[in-house]
Amino acid sequence: MKTALTSLSLLLLASGSEAASVAPHRAIYDLKLLRANENASLQSATGKLAFEIDGSTCDGFTVNFRMATKYRQNDGSAAVIDTLSTTFENAGSTELRHQLKESVNGAVKETDRISVNRKSPDAEGTGNMKSKPNEPFAVPAGAALPMQHQLKLMALGEAGGGRDSSIVYDGSDGTHSFRAISFVGKQKSPGSVTRDAANPAAAALQGEAAWPMTVSYYALDGNSETPEYQVSFDMYTNGVASGLVLDYGDFALSGTLSDLKILDKQSCP
Image 1: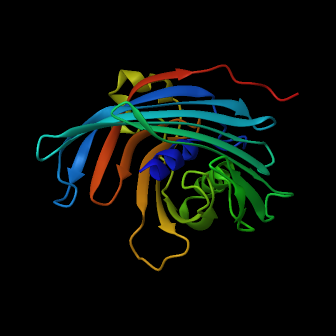
Image 2: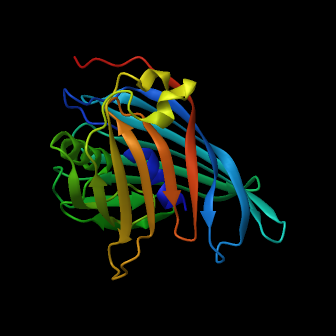
């Protein structure tokens, strides 16, 4: 699940183009169970998702992300999964730094630090994991880092929408990259997203247009027609997302924007 969470946090970045530019911001979402099939054996799920985006297109971006969710099984047992990550991608998309900490019921289950470097945005990259210091790994040539991928999706939206297929590496699943199949819909005019027009927490979004986006992640080395996970949301032109759906296959969570603060934007020298 942490793979989907980190990818989601990194997809909530906007492009550096004139029409759609990232607004550093802090957003909080209330999570609840949207659906669950028999394999999930879930009675309920509630939680919070929070992330803070800061930086600029000249200095790079940092995303601080946290998701804490309580899952109650059909047998009455419960578990709280708390995932924290910090990710930095430099302005040229040649450097990625990713830190992860995941706890279950207060006990730390996983921590790691990953670094990736490459000579150019399209070159093969070399990655290192703190947990496996003697096992460097390769990031495929042409793989998009998170900001690269988001720039591509925003450009697709500005061109009228459509389908995109990209190899993506974001550090969320160790050494593995994914094939991301994305669909970007037609632009929605400012104030036309009824869900947000009625939500006081989304007041800062009323003057922004938005694109509906769905991104499905497939194992790069597999032949399955079923994605590992899927995320969908409305992406506003200031980089804020709303109407989150996190689909893990056997179950899905919905995220409602409950608090939003637009932070001071850094100016490039």
